[in-house]
Image 1 (cartoon, rainbow, N blue to C red):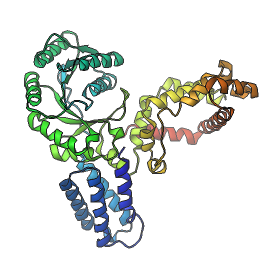
Image 2 (cartoon, rainbow, N blue to C red):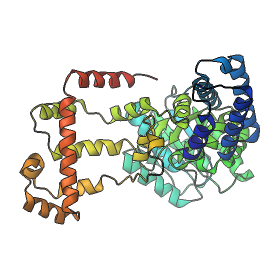
Image 3 (cartoon, rainbow, N blue to C red):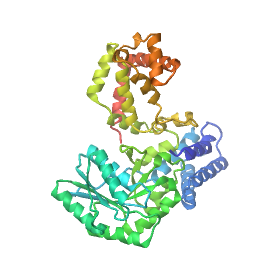
Length: 445
């Protein structure tokens, strides 16, 4: 995420990160490179220029040139300004109505239908809502079928009517259905087009006027860069929407849309899509995103994701097994499944301070665990519970059954032994204290 921008900003600020002599000239040169990095990220020229001008004024006003650590202060100023540019603080949804109605708008291919499902799952699991998805795309029959598939996948009801061609009537009937069936949240998936056109705008405006939604959200593909910002403005002029959803942010190495869209439409980014899985949705926190762009990681979000998958009862069982030296491969498999549910591995590694830069250029596959899982699944229940019993003949059979080599099996056993020892050490006071600290981080916002 934002790999190119992060790399270029790091290079631009590198000269000011030491304790050497800092002058007005090299500050100007640094900010020129920062502006160039923003332009390469597809940030609007005017926004990029205003950004660097503001940073320069604040730097000179705070006497950065005579500071004991001018480099660190410049990084902080850039981070603070990036945070403000992206919205300053997180903005939630207005869900006070019963039922609350959320209208989704955007171009075809932006990910509206999938995101409607992601949002329904998020509000169902995190906010205890009983959502209803309403299919209002009357032009693309596959969109209605897709929404039903998504609804089945996440256990959320879907209202549709293929016999009705008026999306306004479908939206109104969907809301009436929600009221009659105890749904306190309605998410309306509307039709998109390949480009902004008058008919599309007229239709979405009619739906908006007829249902007066609690929230109108504009869904945009972040990988389209400045085009995403221009499209958002066109929609905003007609709808005056409440917030922006950025999809496919996990594949966006530039970041122009995320950085500049708030300043153009004056509406906050509320959520971001970070992968294909239905759980791959995050609340947008401008400060945390600024940290990630500048290579500082995002430990708070990482801990929050871990806590979402954290099973307290299961953790107690694991703790007892570690203490008794009975932690086996079945338990290890459980841990792997929890990690996989947290999101794609490259995204997770990017949340660890410094890890993104250290792992630059490495291809971190989302299926990185599949070989480990294959080896473990080739073991008998006894072998999984007592890895020490694995002799040469057993290793040979496991390697053959998993399609791996004996060296792969030996390497996994060695890594498992090292991990078990480390987890045993974590049972001491220092480990418990560290876990308490991580628990405290989860409460930060």
